Image 1 (tube, rainbow over the protein chains, first blue to last red):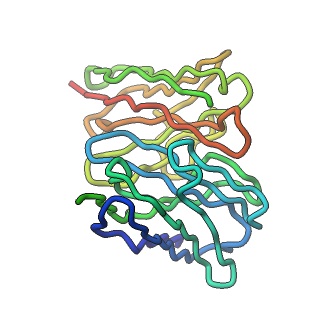
Image 2: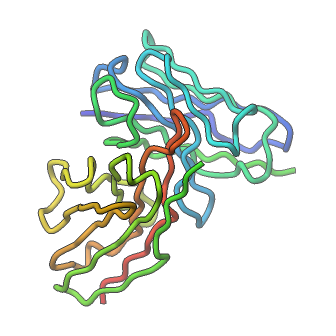
Image 3: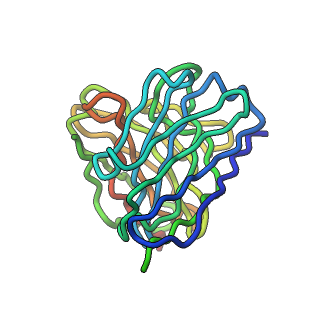
Amino acid sequence: EVQLVESGGGLVKPGRSLRLSCSASGFTFDDYAMHWVRQAPGKGLEWVSGISWNSGGIGYADSVKGRFTISRDNAKNSLYLQMNSLRVEDTALYYCSKAGHFRFYDWYCDHWGQGTLVTVSS
Amino acid sequence: SSELTQDPAVSVASGQTVRITCQGDSLRSYYASWYQQKPGQAPVVVIHDKDKRPSGIPDRFSGSSSGNTASLTITGALAEDEAVYYCNSRDSSANRVVFGGGTKLTVL
């Protein structure tokens, strides 16, 4: 059974940093691209960042480019999101999601974690 | 970057058919996927690669596409289908992904 468990969320002041982690199990992690998707309270889904199975392809939403860095450690079956210079508008539930196709940087996410809440407030 | 546009809300009588649409230039080049999200839950994919249904998704859900518009059709909607539905696709910019704003489906 595929499991994605996010951690690292919390309350942080504007301008500070936070690192999210996603621990994956139940599939061969290094064969699939992964994504971070966030959802502000009462709002829709917003793609944040994605990374290919071998870290050769990486993308960021304009809203986070230059501030957030996605990475993965295939040996540890883990995905990360380093978030710097946090803003109030970064407040959201952050989901980790697995791409659906083998070794393809695709946008179809077949499994999602339950999310970790990031609150940016002074 | 590209955008995907969805109607904010749609309603359907129980047992009837409803179509939810998603428009965007990127859909001329890339297939849409569709996700169902119920309150307090993570999204669940109901259609991928334009018209593929994952195992466990009822066959009343179907997908199609024409030009810059992708559609999710629920044939014989049930009360349990009440949720917010999101489309997504690849952005025209390299390695970016985009989601539509979501459509809240009410089953009357």
